[in-house]
Image (cartoon, rainbow, N blue to C red; front, top):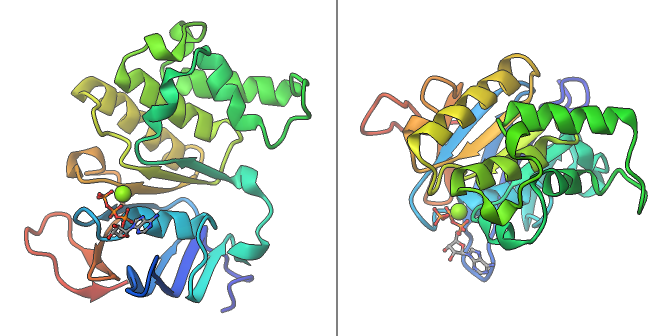
Length: 238
Ligand SMILES: Nc1ncnc2c1ncn2[C@@H]1O[C@H](COP(=O)(O)OP(=O)(O)OP(=O)(O)O)[C@@H](O)[C@H]1O
Ligand SMILES: [Mg+2]
């Protein structure tokens, strides 16, 4: 079946990439279906963030193809369909702006400058503030919130366009158990109710245990499927 007839949310087809001469990823392949939750694990420096940046078209593979919703990533235009929370995004949280304003910047690609947006945009903004448990702090400055609340604001920002694919790179770093539980609940809602595909990069298996359909490890530049229960992962190809 062609990619157009049966589009996956995100597909890596034999992707090779390196920043210098040495490849970080070598013929890495992975398909993430719409509505699927895939966790990506692997040691520091193994290439998880690089894989996410390739998947979002922020880096170009030297060989192989990346497809978003069936389209070659270089020709993909519907950016609203993608939500991305980069690793260590919390550097942005010192900005002197309110929670609602930060979340609203996620709509920047859809709004004309100076415009408040349509009713649908405003409804979506309310929805994601509620979903991430931020409605009560919406007028507070982002810099005055806890690390866990800030992280949730950045996730809400990634969700405000109503994306069909959400990429989270280490979303629970520095976040306490309660905030992790809220995040987990909202991710479950997004997957089961809204049918969003989620790629969740993490070193913390607790964050995705019971939600992830699959766990994939970046190992020696390749992607291997791992059994979340097994201590020693098997080298089954994905
Ligand atoms: N902009 C860059 N320029 C050159 N090399 C880079 C760059 N970004 C990453 N690398 C290298 O690519 C490799 C993979 O890095 P990457 O950030 O993808 O790893 P990671 O799996 O996300 O690690 P971590 O768990 O620490 O977040 C590392 O060896 C890293 O040093
Ligand atoms: Mg990383």
